[in-house]
Image 1 (cartoon, rainbow, N blue to C red):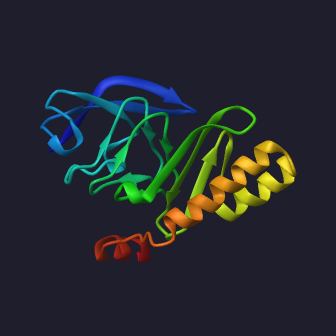
Image 2: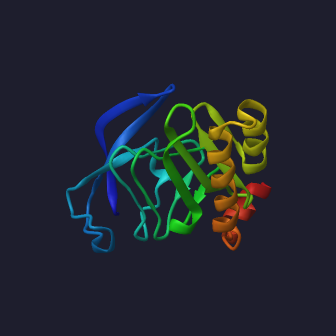
Length: 172
């Protein structure tokens, strides 16, 4: 085992999140045995194998899964059907938009790119439509549209791998 859920919890939109604690060193990511990490809703959100880790104030919940060599940190929130296997599967930018918030883009199990920003959560195409509707012609629209172009470029060659066991579970 790589980590345990501590008794330290917090509520986030009706979801109980548990702070994690490292049971072993993860030298590739600067994690030492005993270090406290970020927040997850349950063990299904962070693989016990591999080198994946959730840091600081980052939160992972819902059907989101972090595995492989992925790192989630900062004010990132990963949830829904997110599938983060490596750093290539997630991107975020802070201090953007009219509220100077954080925009997070990540792959989901279907291979699509999902975006969260404030109360918005949807596909990259849905986000682009929402930006054009709400911020059309403004400086904020320009910022978001540049980020959308970057996200498309960044994720262009990113693939999601789902192992056979999970595919079989989905079929049942």
